[in-house]
Structures are given as C-alpha cells and as structure tokens.
Image (cartoon, rainbow, N blue to C red; front, top):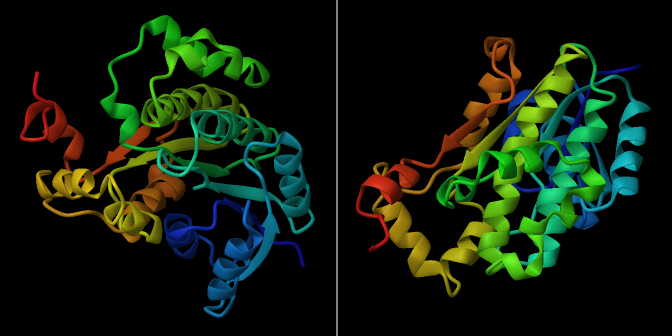
Length: 277
C-alpha cells in the first residue's frame, strides 16, 4: 500500500523529535552517514508504532541524496522533508563543514524540491550561529542564495584564505542555509510546496552534552546561563516550531527562518553576552 513519505536526513534527537511529532501514518525514510545511528532511531520509532526504514546517506554526495530520494519514492509521494543532518565546528575541519553543511544542504533542498508533492512541506535545521556573524553584503547574500550548487564551494568568500576557523565556516554554512531556503521557497512554490528553516540555539542532545564537557564547555554553559531563558532548550521545543511550519496552520509561511535560542542571540547583541568591544 502506498503511503505519503517523509525523508528524515540526520538520525539525531532533533530530527527524531520532529519525525515523531509529524510522521505518524507515513513512511519515514531515515538517512544518516552512520547507518547504525539511522537503524537505532528507526528501531526506537518502529517500536513506538511508526513505520521507518534506515538507509546510509552522505549529505555531501549528490548521488547518495538521489539514492535516498529514489528509495523513498518506492513507498509513495514524498510530502515531507526534515533535514537535521550536519557536522559541528568541533567535529570536523573547515572543508568538511562547508562540503556537508553548506553544499550538502543546498543539494538536498534542490533535489527534493524537484520531486516534492503538491502541498508538501520541508524544514531544514540551521543554527543560531548564522545570526551571530557580521552582516554580509547584499551581493554576498545573493551569491549564497542563487549560485548553482556545483559552483557554491568555488565562491571567493568560501576559500580557505577567507575562512578564519571551523566556527567561521559553520557560521557561513548556516547563513547559506537560510539564504538557500529563501531561494528554494520560490521553486518549491511552483509545485505548491513550502520550505522553511529553524535556527536552534543550545539544544540538549548527546552531541551537546559532549560539547558541554569539551574544551568549549564553559563557553556554552555561560551562553545559556546568560540568555533570557536561563537554560538550554530541548529537541521537543524545536519540534513545536517544526509542527507549526509543516502543518496547515503554517500554510502562509515559506522561505522563512525561525530563531529558537532562548534569547541568546538577543543577549549577544544587546545584553550580557555581548562581546567586549
């Protein structure tokens, strides 16, 4: 029996929280570079009554992305995309961050946008980091939004001499995600579909706990201690926003980015987290 299909890219806590909120009654195809992670999430959800299949997927590979789309289409119409895949500044070098988080996300949005069903919706997980870096010029933003995907990594602003460190690479990738979503929303709209992004702050996941206990741990703990919410967030709070964006209640929302960080970015610019000048 054919079902509507959700593609979940990235087998982590945020992606699973969104899939659990939205994926009942659907076929959920879970892709992750680590197949064991995808199988673990699929197992948890299948044991809770969902219908999930796990696949190996490399976000940095167009072929791999096309393969998971082809597999998803065997089950029915692709009506939802949840992209929660990526690497963090402490996990990977500059080149990998740009290849996965920047280029890979652009390719995924492009390829799914070619086949998304009318009425379909998508959300990609960006980051508060993209909101922290200095503003780019309108021309730089336009290039991030509209440059053909296979030319993105050749942009001068993304060359090694112009990327200071892995955090800067991550910020550029997340800024690109937001701009790419805006541009893709126009194309998705031609198919009667919508795409948005969510920029979470510090969300408690196994990865975040590793960060709290790592060399940047004090930085992160200070960030959520001095943000207005006074705490980190949870994956289910991100899923709350995703549910609004992907359900009919969000039918007039597309090409938008939603910052959900407990006010940390507000504090960074106008409060106690503001860097000393």
